[in-house]
Amino acid sequence: MDGKDGSNVCRLNPERHTCNFLYYTRKKGMKKLLMLLLLAAPVSAQTVTPQFTQGSMQSTTTTTIDIERTIETEVYGGDYNSWSGSNVTPSSDIAGDSTTFSVTTAGDPWSLEITTRNAGVVETIDITESIDSTSTTTSLSIFSQ
Image 1: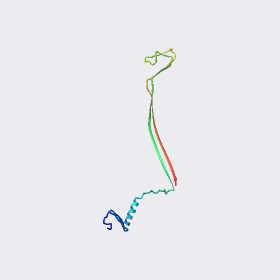
Image 2: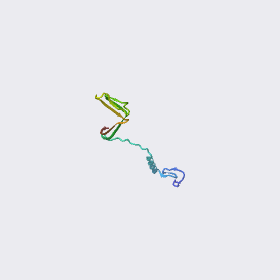
Image 3: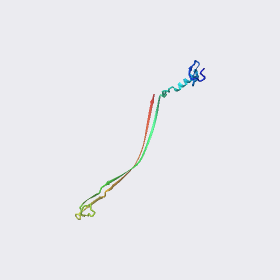
Image 4: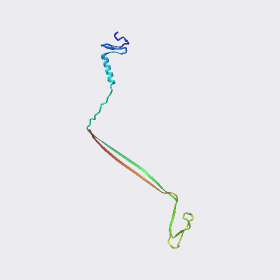
């Protein structure tokens, strides 16, 4: 038996190695084995060394801001009643609706000031602003190896 008939026993021969599932000569087997080992070899990365010696980089950034805003303010107050004057006399409390004022000394000069305000909005303030801003930033980087 020379090994080509598919025997179940593998045996070595100086010319060839035969078995029931493999049949190839030593030279062909070594080439295939070498190819399989090369494919299964681990891969290693090589370091990359930059080839430049010097350089520079310039960057310019421009930012524009446009803001339109209105500020609305309302001032609130409470009830307020007051009077001031000279040569006048009130008939009762000035908060009453039926209060009257009369001149104290007839013929003399007199003055009267009455201030009455209901509770609520006393003043409204509206402020409109327009804010425009532009900024430019330039940076320069110089590097060498």
